[in-house]
Image (tube, rainbow, N blue to C red; front, side, top):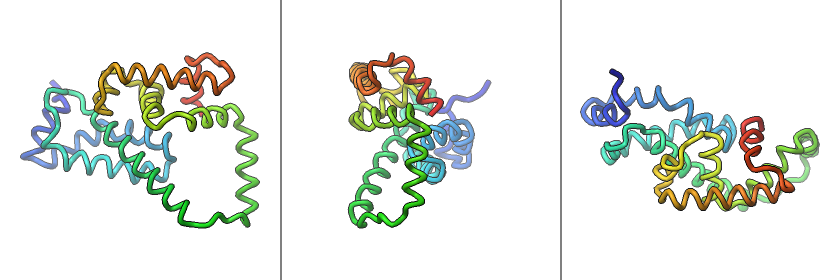
Length: 189
């Protein structure tokens, strides 16, 4: 029988190399989530940081949870927030460079070519970070409400209310489009 994540994490407390099985099982999912949130280049770095943080925190892992994915998504989501805060500080510290017209032209072409994606990005950008995290964990990673609650350390009722609010706001931002189509746009964007 295949050991649960909780069993592997427990074993890794005495056999650190055992933790590699957690990485092997979940790194592709965590990387996909991070790449969707921040792009491929940043995703690789944050996957490593996610699993390093998980390894460092493995002694505090709740062994009553057989699946470590929600825990790992929670760590990854926290790293996304930290990355965005650091990035915003860097952007505020550096004056805007308007001399790169080729870049501006590329951006304009991408915006024109991906109008639906742009609407969705705008809609997601209009959400609070908390609502966006819940929506993306449900839509992209297909986590159950209970898993999202565990990942973000919030009650299931809060997951439900944040998801409802996020879907309503995205629907409004998309001109009344059915919010169940958002998952399709997110996955194809």
